[in-house]
Image 1 (cartoon, rainbow, N blue to C red):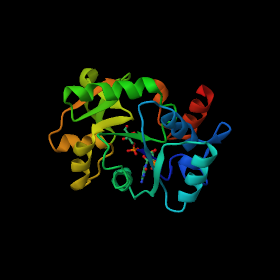
Image 2 (cartoon, rainbow, N blue to C red):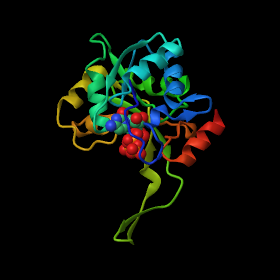
Image 3 (tube, rainbow, N blue to C red):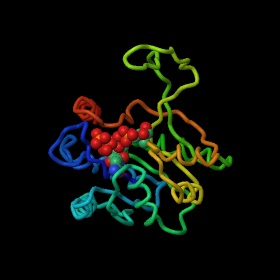
Length: 216
Ligand SMILES: Nc1ccn([C@@H]2O[C@H](COP(=O)(O)OP(=O)(O)OP(=O)(O)O)[C@@H](O)[C@H]2O)c(=O)n1
Ligand SMILES: C[C@](O)(CO)[C@H](O)COP(=O)(O)O
C-alpha cells in the first residue's frame, strides 16, 4: 500500500505533496514506479487526497504500471488513509507492506530486509536508523533530561506485516498513531527493526525535497 493522501502543509506547496514536482515528474510517480517494478510486490493500493483520485489513475496509466489494484480516497490522518487502503487490499494477500509516498527513494534492498524476518514469526518489521544527535527531553524550553540514545532508532517505511495482524490492528481505535507498527505494538505485537536507509528520507520540508531531487 502506498499512502499519498497527506496535505504536505510543512512543504507549503500549492497542491498535495504527492503531486508536487520531483525532478521531471511528480513525487508520487517515483515510489509508485519503484514498487510496481519490485518482484516482491503483487498488487498496490494507493491512497490519495479527495479530488486527486483521477490524477492518480492517469499517472498510473502514464507510467504503464501494472500492479495498481485500487486508488482510494485517503482520510484525515495517515492512520485513516491506511484504514481506507486496507479495505481494498485483496482478501488473498498474506503480507501487507505500507509505504509513504513521501519517501520516494524506496528500493528492493529495504523491501527485502523488511519482508525476510516475517518468516520468523514477527508481527511486523520496520526499517530504522540510529540517532545521530544527542537527544534531550525538554519542558517549556528547559532541558529536563538527556535521553540515552543507544536504544533509540528513528523509524522509516516501508513497514511490513502479516495481513491478518495489520487488519486486526486497524479494526480497533486508531488513536493518534503516527505509524502502522505502533498500532500493532499497542496490541502486544512484536516488531522487528532492520537497517533503514538515509536515502529513504521523508520529504517534509522544501529542503528535503531539494535534497531528494539531488539524489535522483
Ligand atoms: N491524511 C494523511 C496524512 C498522511 N498521509 C501520508 O503519510 C505519509 C507520511 O505523512 P507526512 O508526509 O509526514 O505528512 P503530510 O500530512 O503529508 O505532511 P504535513 O504534515 O506537512 O501536512 C505521506 O506519504 C502522506 O501522504 C496520508 O496518506 N494521509
Ligand atoms: C510513518 C512515518 O513515516 C514513520 O516515520 C512517520 O511517522 C510519518 O510521519 P508524520 O509526520 O507523523 O505523518
